Image (cartoon, rainbow over all chains, first blue to last red; front, side, top):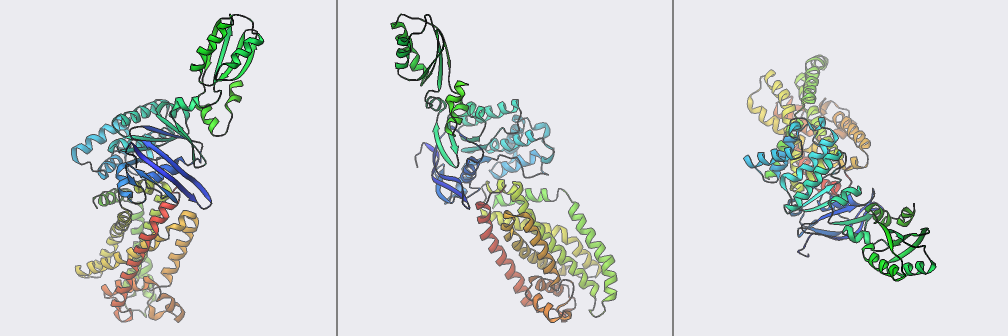
Length: 320
Length: 252
């Protein structure tokens, strides 16, 4: 195992009868990074998290978490990883204070230290006023915050969050995201599964897009956006009427994918990497004696990237 | 092992946070023993001291119900996500299974212990009988929980089928056994089936420890062997089946 990786999976497969929830996944998560798994429902994100945390066993393939094999050394893996589940369910009659105290005790915290950590975590997640309510009396958002808060009690080497802000209001989402980032700063490697694009954009160092149990691509956000051919849309206003020669020159600029004439002096150009394309375009236009009077650039959103990789066409949206 | 006891304490606290079911069991015992038992024992004259015989039968039924409840709780835990969380904690699967058994035993002790003590007091039995009786009930409880938890794999396919099987099994195991009537009084066909039923041996062993109608009971050494063997084998079966069931099937 590469020491730079906190998690490595090799050909990881989980089948339920004829259905492959995870299909030969090979994926690395670097130490100290936040990797976001982005994918539609049923893409295998949750199954992957359950396999990594040894809640499930793989049908074939394997994975290592902090160097420990999930099949051969499951106890060591469980000591190294923590998972916040998608749905906050379970101990209906227990109270948040007792739930976190139990969680802390299981991971070796005792006495005054345990009490301090539990109180701080409850306060950090705005659950202190509800600490003596039963779990079943908490709101959906409170229950979800409690589920997420567990990982902040024992701060595992690898912290896994399955849709950490589902059911949480906007203010709560931001709070949880900031806490997850802080957890990373404190040394944990983070894996977040979500189908919420904004969450991925806010948190991710790298994004892995999954579909049908397979990894389609894993890259940082910038590279993902740049990977879409003609994904950047540049609207260029010119000082003169656009001639055929001008159209030919612009079409010939490296990185141009498609050129549309919007009006007598306005072009709409679909390009790769607009930051590289723009200086070359301006030089070419000026060489024909024209001036650029306005530029408007819009890059693809992560929505576009997501839809692009999961089967939709981005250009169709850009034209809309 | 430290984690096992933390978990046991945590689950025990939740189990007894509500005492409604425990009170129901005690009320069930009280009505059955003091009303139905009083009357039926006057009708049944061919068994010496059928009132005590019936009382011990009630204790076995309660033990069976509590054991069934432990199995059901295990299954519900898997469906509700409680077990999924526990599976992610740094606890060995074997320890987790042992914890579930200990939780079931503790539940049995709390719920069946007081009626047992009441019967002992009402019948003027010595305290030492309490120890042997509790040992028999707990040994039976282990076997029952082992069966119920081992069957939990059915529940992952269909909870309705699991519930139906458990209800059917409960009805058959209690009726085709010596829980409510001695072996010697059963028709041949009934007694043949009852001899293949572990509850028969558990029931007779409990009555041996309480010195009830000793002549009509099975050999206590054979009964002890059967009860212990069933307990060990079902627990071993559960320890083998449960991790495979849980780790191979979606829990929600």
